[in-house]
Image (cartoon, rainbow, N blue to C red):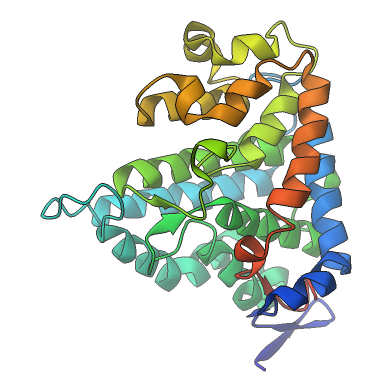
Length: 305
């Protein structure tokens, strides 16, 4: 196993360790599972009642993460979609973008991180590389979103990001990540990974709606208004949940209640607090608790299994 030392610890290349369904018990009893659950709950709490335009501290390191994502997005220009195929899903040019990201991940992290963190780069890189989709299947789903959050959690555990960055992690970093993912999904017609179709929450994202529901707590926007397309259009730039609804409306045809049944049903819940609580429970069951989703996660010295 390859290792490197930095800040008093040995870093290792993270590996897959959830290889078959029986490994799920080990995963769900692990300290990393508990850390992931606690991390997303803490981030949700940090944005309760806070639109994107609200006041919050954006540290230099948060800005540096956003710059990395900006650079990753610019790679799209090098890999325009292949128009020679008429497939509804899975434009093969995505493989070129992923390959480019993998080649540049080390340099991107080198530019982002202070020298004292450089020893951790080859342990951090796989989480970042797996955060945008699978090159073989040309798909994207909640497992890739989870890989991104585990990368951010690693940055927090290293001390590069601080607890005081929590609000900005959601409203600046995660939002920037979502905008990039949505562009990738549209540009390369990514297949939804493990989609439950009409009965799933969303083809691609989950935390977008979990964090977004927290933002809407105490707002003037009731759950029933979350599928009012005029309100969605007016307020999507300020609320992640509505941004997610807007993207669905833009990319799917037909009545909303037909193609997005769960989100339609959520609009009938009385309070955002209840929505947020329900989505938190659902995340543990439908994402963290599903072998097909978590089997691709990797573990090293920062996040162990």
